[in-house]
Image (cartoon, rainbow, N blue to C red; front, side, top):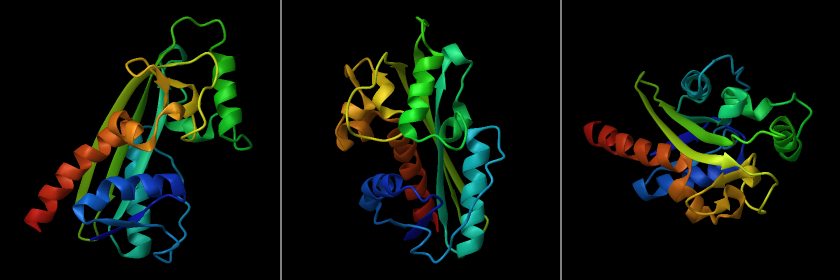
Length: 197
């Protein structure tokens, strides 16, 4: 089975293929499916945005499409950046500038608990939808650590592992991450779906 990823993020594509290939599912990019869709993320929840993206790419490609909407929710910032994680601080910022802004906004803050959330949605041309949600609790470090990952990974610290996401190998990260958990749940739901259809 082939799914189109409703994202241009190459790292996300690699992560999804890594986990779903065991099911015999191949995930291709929008470019490989011959579509280029810019989806306005107007939802106020990860669920809404994930569905918007998957539906738009499924309609454009005529193929089942999978989307992940994820973000970082920081307790001391009332859940921000949340659904705006990728656009935190405005359009002109890159990953490094975004996590630096986050650290700046947490300056002097002792409560640094946070969680990464991921919602994965798959829309099929026949109208069926499969959705799964995963969360990974952690804290925001005082300074970036590690070279791996992307986004807020260098400042997201997992107390149980005593490392940030950026210090973990891809295998270690997939085992504990919000996306890894959502994908495991999604994989189970997709397996059941494929058996029925």
